[in-house]
Amino acid sequence: MSTRPDLPHRLPVADGRYVVDRACAEDVPAVVALLRDDLLGASREGGEHDLEPYRAAFAALDADPNQLLVVVRDEAGNAAGEVVGTLQLTFVRGLSRGGATRLQVEAVRVAAPTRGSGLGAALMAWAAEHGRARGAVLAQLTSDLRRTDAHRFYARLGWTHSHAGFKLDLT
Image (cartoon, rainbow, N blue to C red; front, side, top):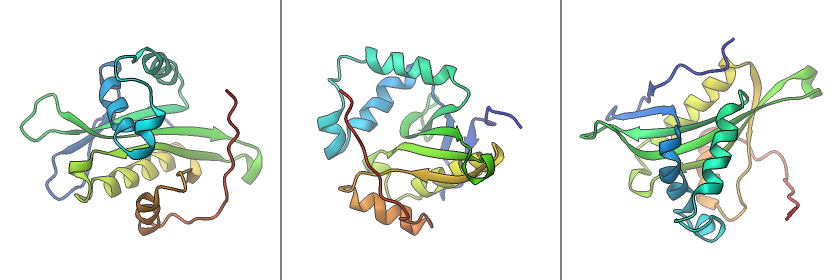
């Protein structure tokens, strides 16, 4: 079983112009812009001119075979493909569930002008399939309680609100 996905991969969206691909260092500014492009991210993410912490984090996660940061490119009329979506996958091996691997999905973002196109659903379906291919038996994600639109989206895709999460700020 390969730890690297078969990428790039065309997503089955009506217009067929979106491709999910492994993020590269040059994508970091676009990913950070997507993370900042909402009410919570705007106040949480660092200044747009200081990308160094993000570049260092990208280098570390890109070197880890249990991490995968992907971007979605809109290839309509753009050879390089504008980044219009992203998510991070983490594979967590544990002793529970018979030593199962879990797929943790985080930092799911789709650019505002692209929402409602089916792209988010196609990206989440791809993530689940990639998790299965890597041997994950369960996919999980966390979402801030204030992201009610995102919660409706995940529920529509069949994700269940099954647990309460807790966080502890360690700074």
